[in-house]
Image (cartoon, rainbow over all chains, first blue to last red; front, side):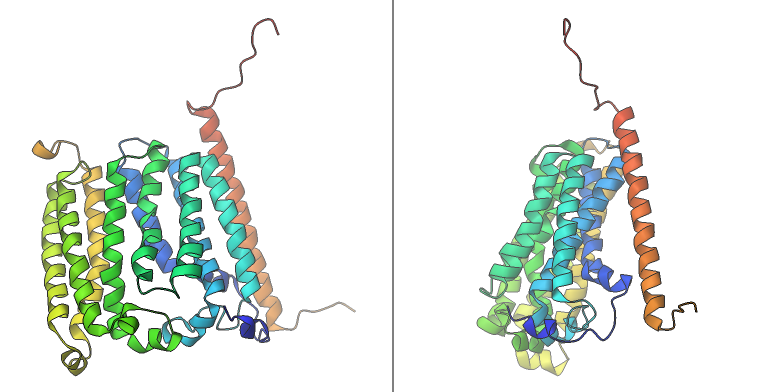
Length: 312
Length: 53
């Protein structure tokens, strides 16, 4: 890591509270909170609202802490990429050391508090998630292998499992279905982004699949990951967290997503550049709705009365 | 002569300090609420003293 150049820069602007908040990656945190809440509410055990709110808050803080540690470690490449160049460290508002201390302090606090508010297993899972995102993904895989997104996606897939464990204190198959949904969704989502944000990853030297294996191979990979994702997402309808509402949502979204992945696979670079990556951008946008609506449907099924015939 | 805060940085620090203060207060309230729920809920038991001790 070569973030020494940032440490030597004078801090022109003193950090505001908002800059520290930005270190927590609030947009990622929204996804973490949403999927963790779905995991918690889909579980067959009722949790006291105060314990539920507090526990989800600590999960959110833990996720934010891992975001701060990621920004500390990746300050050098964040400064190179257009998408991340305005983050607090490359913008010179927060020093890398401040982000590091902030991240470590919040990590420790969030794990300890989750152990007290919920249970030790949930806290251990949160600690492992932070470790996985910071050490396995950010420090190790991100700059080493084009499979960075695939394996790193596991870190983003843990929150619904943590939510479930907050409620039940134990594991079962259902939270791992939610885990698998996010895990399988992450690669096509990020590779679609990498196809139209090409110069960013190239400039930073991050071994994205588009850089190491070429864009044609990336298009194949998107389709190859989408097919098992579709099977998994639709199959989940016939488990205890699924139901008719989920099935309808899954059928529509997966038909659209599969069509999008097929269109991406069929196109070549000349066609994509001619229409400014229209299909790739629309699949990326759809992928955001895809995950949100699948988890929304799981939430609806959890909140509806449990009288659904074959799904009961 | 009194010392006056003339720089914009003092305003910024004041805002940051108030923000941190409010968050700490909210944290204290949260811990209080958690403690109350844990103690009044079923999963908290006072340690029992064995007979004869």
